[in-house]
Amino acid sequence: MGYRGQVMGFLVFALAGAGCASASDPATNGRGGTSGAGGAVSAGTAGSLSNSGGSGGANSDPGGASGLTSAGASGALTEQCPELLEARRRSGTVLELPIQPTLQGKPLRFGESNQLSDGSSLTPLDIRFYVSDVALLRASADPLPVDLVTANGRVEPYGVHLYSADAAESNTLRVLAPPGAYIGIQFLIGLPLPCNQRSPDASKAPLSPTSQMTWPHTGFLFLRYQGRTTPASTAANGGAGGAEPTGSMSGFPPVIHMGGSLTQELAPRVRVNGSFSVPASGSYSTGMHFVLDDVFKGALTDVDLTGFDGPPGPGEEVVLGERLRRNISGLQLFSLDP
Image (cartoon, rainbow, N blue to C red; front, side, top):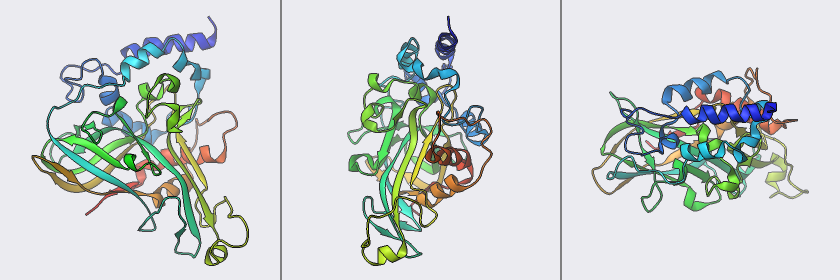
């Protein structure tokens, strides 16, 4: 057996035991054999990984393990990240969180030119990211895991939501919540390891190739951004004077790709503070801002990239994405409406 086969054999063995939870685990109780998607990543595990950076880096593929998603490990991965999940609870209130990208304190209009404070303009061309492993935060209790649900109340496939700025139906995050008072919400930006290891070609949306988030080096991208900036003089003339440049004019990078790893839990966890009360029936909505200022800040702030290899010949967008991933614990990527 060659080295690649040994790696895959080890992963099949490890994944058969990974993600197993005790019957007392409130995050996985009542979910049959499908606990991997909802409870495989504990709050402590994800938090420590997002701060440490881990060995191998966010976009690494140690040992050439990218082939595992189409080989013998696929059966184990399917069991740990199934498409159909048993709901954690049968009743509750749908908490709706419409997501609005913002920049410099203003709503960002997708696909349009947005005027910036220095006179330049930014046109966002692609903004998408995965959300998974959601929990509501309580003042005097542990985080409460909740199911991501669709507009018709069904649990989202694989327990994952894909936000894409150009797809209106994806722009609202929904969870089924017990009534009560909460002080915030937390979730992973990205995918739990078993879902990240799935084969896109053997998966349905949002883990299929139509997501435009597939990347063989890491399984899937966790976050993807692309934008076009125009200098102040050109923006003042309505974009006249030739094609708009693709580089950064206001300190904003044109492309950011944040990924994970096929062998490590590297999806960072974010906490969104804000008090709200969920009623006993109906639905409840509160807006959630996706703060591009902090995305750019995280991508452009130097950080120790020890252990980061990335795919062969990683581009600048990959390095920016890994900086963002390692800096996320000190950022406020999301905020709730007051």
